[in-house]
Length: 79
Image 1 (cartoon, helix red, strand yellow):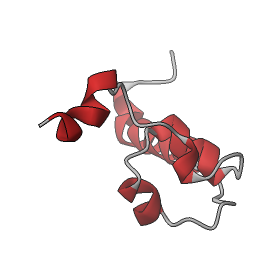
Image 2: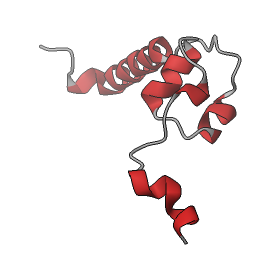
Image 3: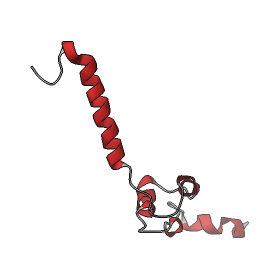
C-alpha cells in the first residue's frame, strides 16, 4: 500500500492540500523594502525583480524598462 488508497482518499487529499499551503507559506518572503505590493505592481516589475526589491537588494526604479529599441525613446522627437 502506498500513500494513497481508496479508504483514506479524502484524508490523503486534505493532507496534500495542507502540504501545498505550507509550501506556499515558505515561498512567501517577508517584505523588507517598505514598498507595498500595489507599489511594486505599479512599477511593472517581473516577479524576480519584485523579490529583489522585497529583500531590500534594490529599489523598484533600479530596473530598466524592457527591450526598448534605440529609436523607441526618440520617436516623439522625430515627428
